Image 1 (cartoon, helix red, strand yellow):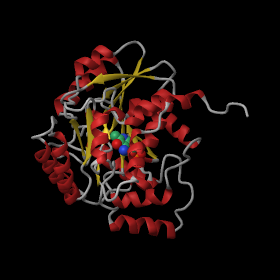
Image 2: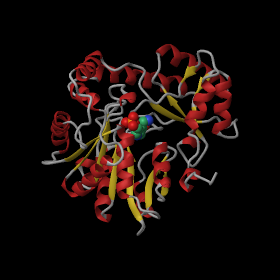
Image 3: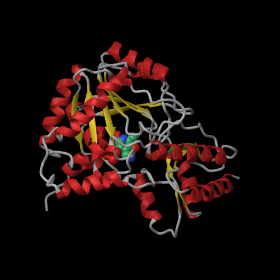
Length: 372
Ligand code: PMP
């Protein structure tokens, strides 16, 4: 047979998270700190709305950009939150779908994409598959946004900057001042910003800031996966102000030839979801965050995360790197992810505390023992 795999397939590696899942499958009742989704289920009202939508015949393709009712709902939220008069919108198949459409519409081979490191894995792989080059900006040890370093990284080839706050894997939440400074910088250089705000509802210490409020060259990606625990429903959306109208138009055209539309019954159910108050769930995760920080800060070098449901702690110096520490943790029934899955360095590990309080207590005990 002739070789059939495209060159770009050589640029991607099996996700490190999947490798942990494969190991996890062999463990009995592990403390699973590796999961990137909430441990609660989709609220009953939203499930009922999805079932009703299917029974009522919302089973066909929707418009490429999305169901009108959902678009109207999103327009209301975006206009209120951003003050944009006539935002461009498209409902996407998760934020992943939005990221793919956005990168397909913007990245040429050779383009440089500025990405703060640590980063959500998908950015690097999507950019590489399109022939772009990620320029990583080191944000260790506190994961604040290093605006000056970003400015120094800008060249003629810079196409865009990716921001993600609250962040996966660090849980970092950018302050108003950081967001305003980077907005000023992006404006000065006329650079597109893609802001992945999938964890926007999980902010514990201060309201979540969005660069879209300060810079109208921002493409905002938001999602339902984490806020409503519907990761399998594949729902998200992209929003932008007037200056990025043609980007949204192109993303919609590309959606026509790729995803076609986001899942129609779940678009209908998402209208219902957007009316729900999820703050009770967020309060529970806030408490889990506090407990996790309290439980581990004596043994581990860590920065208190302000949001999402992750912590990014430094592996104890008695281990040669984070991967070796993670292997040791897995041998001891605790599943965590080595930092090099999300970073150009292998010094830290990611903990997801989206699990039961009982498992959190067990995990804290084991990790503290291993750090001694
Ligand atoms: N962005 C970030 C930062 C994420 O953590 C995730 C999910 N792990 C996604 C995007 C993709 O989410 P989805 O496609 O389910 O909306």
